[in-house]
Image (cartoon, rainbow, N blue to C red; front, side, top):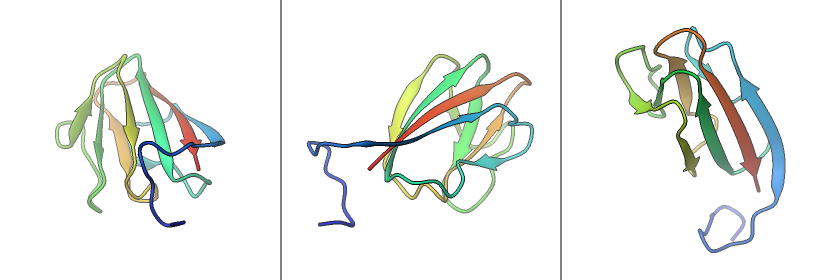
Amino acid sequence: MADRFYADATIEPAEYVQLTDLGTATGIGAGGGRVAMIQCLNQNVRWRDDGTDPTTTVGIRLHAGATFFYTGNLRSIRFIEETAGAELNINLYN
């Protein structure tokens, strides 16, 4: 099915995104892809995907050095840095 992602499916690289200006809530953008591998560097980041922007103290914490796969709606996920200097490296896959 074209609208579903299965963990055991073969995925193809679609796009690379780097976010370095995370002082205000920021999304990935309208790029391609259905799955994201997100790596956080330098400082902790908070994220939410429920339609509300995260703040520096509210949201799911992604620790500096951590990587996770996100399979939800890529247009809904938003990030903000807890402390200046955070960087996100994101690989998008189809």
